[in-house]
Length: 472
Image (cartoon, rainbow, N blue to C red):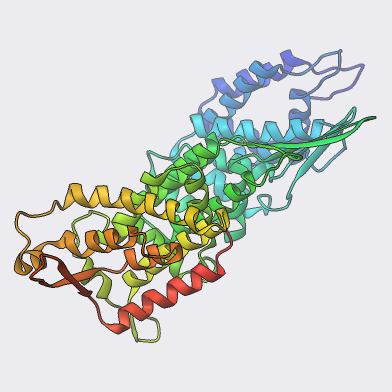
């Protein structure tokens, strides 16, 4: 095909190419596209988008059909080449750059809808190999006083669209996510929310606003939660927390429109898929051990009064993911650190959560009463779960209490709610199990420290680190 005023290539010619590809066996369709040079593919992309009055390109519906055909017929390598051909975002100054970015995302969405699992993996591998997922931090287009800036990489958006469709193939999703470098993973998670800033200028001044399209972000979080790699889940969660924090950074003069409830729902789904595994990795990884990621999520959930979601996390950290564990044994359990010494990983997880909650409540309010109110609401939600899975036994003798696994958590939670404890101490004490020494003559239970100094030191060290270093 050759374009030009005297030799136009219009929509009918583009559709002819589409029909030819559609009518061939997949192997032959790929062979045909493979013979085209990168310049010829870019020429085809330009004709699809030709806006001239002579010839003209495809309208929105026709373009979607074109992308769908290519996604069905081509393999990952050729789809990646076609994606690159449609990416003109580093050329020109107008809103056409944003249209090009949307084309790239739309082609990625078509791959997600129609390509096989293997093709999706090949597509992601091919795009990530050429460095295109991180070569643009933003795409800006301007026209008549309005400037729009997409704060993400276009081809990272395409990859996000594909991964978000891989929920029924968790192993493939894991492989795809694991193939990305940390920089690429962060770019893809950010692009999944499509953060966009709009600046409007006039004689009266200018205004700035931002918006996020969070549906793909939520689905990507849910897909990551279906994988079986706790470290990967933790890294996706942390990347998501950065995006969530940005989405909630608006103010009266620069409002942000974002469905942060959907973002939290996706992150909560990921977290609940393996609470102890994810929190354990967050507490272990050098990039996340300061607790900012979990504190950011907790702050957002607290502001939205999502106490049940946080209580569900708290209860599982206390009793295990299946809510059937012995909290005292869990707290004191050890694993070997790389240097061969004992590490109290469960105690660290509990300290990590308590510290993140502390940082979150202090970030919300400097008022101790408000901090206590928020913390109590979460602990009460956790208590309701403990009561359901481990109801109080009939009779309160010391021998009975020692056999009741819920006691170690329940009384710790109940003590923490007490108005006698300061706001920042509540979660600190709630997450440390107690044991029944005896039942006193007055009927009160003698609550005693359940674990040794080593595990409690691991808890306290982690709590202190996160409470003081997290920046939600």
